[in-house]
Image 1: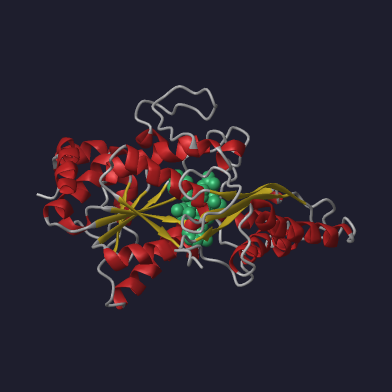
Image 2 (image 1 turned 30 degrees about the vertical axis):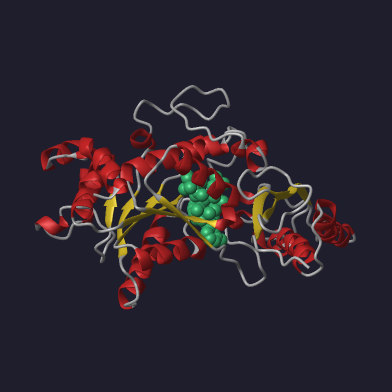
Length: 392
Ligand SMILES: Nc1ncnc2c1ncn2[C@@H]1O[C@H](COP(=O)(O)OP(=O)(O)OP(=O)(O)O)[C@@H](O)[C@H]1O
Ligand SMILES: CC(C)(CO)[C@@H](O)C(=O)[O-]
Ligand code: BAL
């Protein structure tokens, strides 16, 4: 037996569950199940996305019951973890997962543990109806494309009670509970501004990986530090799973798609590409001008930021957009520690975060975005790929 399968078998052992246990543990979801079941045949006992075979699983026992036959049949299972509010970025990860796995499970769970106490947990977009419609549509597309190995088999949409069986430990920095901490990589950049963020992400991903036991997990490059943290967690905890990173999907003007873009409104949306343009300028300094030193590479990004700030300052408060740069970084691809100089054989990660501030003086009827347009923190990055240097 392959060692990874042996570990998975071992991990699955406590999950041998009878149908009667499942019935008992899913009592709370019976009403929803009944409402979406069209007949009483055994294949429609489960809650499904209407007009599809995609199961909606809400408990860990039901997930394990669903997972086990695929293990015994040697069918590969992929997990795409999300917080919902699905967009084309998420769909691209699901497409990639369906290409190379028999079954794709998409998790939709807004994990409170990764939000700081003063962050946007309460207003985070929740769009269940649109999410399941998009999944149903994508699944039809996957079925029509013969090059896919699999399709979307299930959505895992647990409650917080299900994900934190000993009780939710809280969002405070000093909360006590069972947490996974991946340091020091989680302490810099995003982790510096959001000190509980990666603790929450690593903890919930560990739970999801243990509950689903996927062969492969799919994450987006848009959250590049998250991918570095997850890869480190997988390596250091010897988890039998492969981490696949999908390219960032962008709007036509280059803005990385993000669930939080809905907070922006039209005026700030137009200026929000500033971070992407700044990172591109830094990339060009490295790739096209052959710069290797930090100040030369990041200097190019900072010039773009200054230029956009100057442009906006020339406008009146009724027209302008204000933003603050949280950081623009040039870091090592594995440790995320800042680099003074790029070693081309190792490459680097250019990344940044900006805060688009609320509109100062809204015009009459102006679209201020979801939730009245609070400050919106956007992140983006470009990977400077490692390559062999041709020595003269
Ligand atoms: N534009 C994108 N391209 C590719 N993958 C993406 C994109 N946006 C998000 N993802 C990935 O989708 C997964 C789920 O992300 P999430 O549900 O938090 O969406 P999000 O758009 O990143 O939301 P947020 O605004 O909270 O950052 C993550 O692995 C994330 O990196
Ligand atoms: C990976 C994740 C789903 C964990 O909650 C979240 O951090 C996200 O959506 O990127
Ligand atoms: N996509 C990362 C999730 C978050 O910012 O909370």
